[in-house]
Image (cartoon, rainbow, N blue to C red; front, side, top):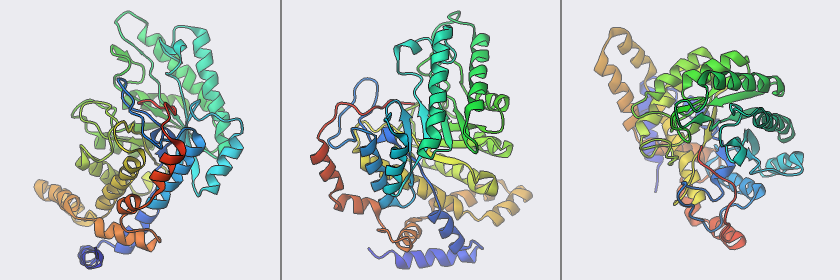
Length: 404
């Protein structure tokens, strides 16, 4: 299919509205979406994990898969790891292997929810010995970071209670604060810790880090290397995530994203599937912030249960790329004029016009200029990589995964 005529028409229209197409393409070429190691292994919902033939069985196979997704998309040059799921004896060698594949290791994620001792919490547990063990594991991950070349520590806690009176909520708040402040002291120079939140699940009476405000307050207590991580699935129905993003950007405390989609709660579906306009709104806030968003980390956090792992991951990355492209072509000058004049519907329609624009020809042109296939999904389906790994790996029972 020849995309060129459509691209040329779109470029002409964008240039006419004052949008520099070459600048848009340069930003799209520089886009960075991090994929998660746990998304390449067998994972899924809590009632059942459907094993996928060819799913990665260890961190080295996960790196191979992540490198393949980057090869197809051109915008996924790093992979997040989860400890101890991805634990190895030689982390320096792991980082070198990643680089030999043309990617890097990104965020390091401690596991503070899987072991039996965390039944009543990790850093918020009423048991001092459990709290000490949890903190020691976080510090261990801080020590892993420079070995693999990471500058991000991603923190998510399942801590909370199921019943009123089960524990003191204020005491648990102080325990969380103490643990995060201590963690901040152990961060490698030039790195950041991203504090994630979740308003419910697995705790159903209260969650110790229940919302963005709680995470933001903790970040302020810790210091300049602490920021908030926004998981797009971790919100109540109807929450305006774009407003949260805008506030945290303006405060300089938006550290990054875990992108996924949800219908009800933390469904961990492919980003941009159930709610593409919401994803577009979020990217509009990021584009509108300009340099204020330059250090934001963009990461996928999804659990592919019934989907082919590689195709699902590729689609996730491409959906983020599409949302970013649509946000970049918003007529920002005209929008500012309409906002200043109080033209309510006119301003909203500027967003709608960009969102409804078919940016596939633009993205195809960007990929060709990067030496890639203009249609990554078609390239994946025509390739034999998935068949090869299925033959080599077979079906693994588990490779470390969970919903976060």
